[in-house]
Image 1 (cartoon, helix red, strand yellow):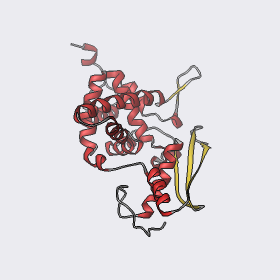
Image 2: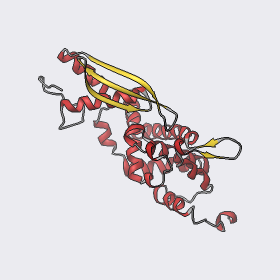
Image 3: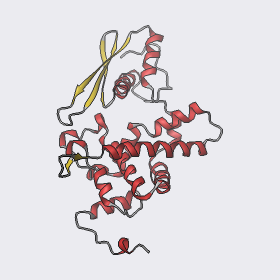
Image 4: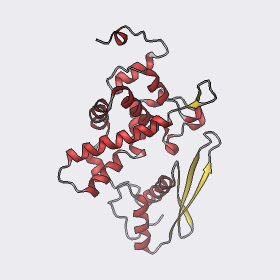
Length: 256
């Protein structure tokens, strides 16, 4: 028996973290400090006394790798006859910023995240999804891969991710807009630029989708690729506002 674990006192300040982890992961942590760090955004970095500051970025990096490994194994088992391309598309949807950010909000992580107020713009930089990745990184370090695997599948994906819906949803709006432009003889252009973030001191990207030289979509994200997808989605939804499923084909005369 682990007596240190049995008789460990939980400080009043740490109780909300223990409650959160019990609720969302179903675990009692060994090292609560890992999970507390996972909820510290770059904009609220903490000094550690030797001139360095720490935040959740390293744990986010680790959690991203753990999630991708778990999802890859999960899909390999769940879809024994699926080809590599199908599995890759499903995996990209399950681990996408959009999916992880939505799940993080469903889990209520926004109430525990420590960040500068001006950074709490989930639609732009998905900091809640990043925090979820960091928590998974902390879980992996604290409890091991098998526990992380079980938690992700049983308490995250089964509960919060509709796999059947993801199978039916194609998220590559950029490709769809380019195809639409070719079909209707319209010129599609993306104007993207890197911008400095005065709060986080980190780069992010803005992208405009131009149709025949006129702006029809705008995106703002941490990567150029994601910003262009957001801009393309905005323009695409103008083509058929009743649905965001790209498999639906706009009317021949659809206009933006």
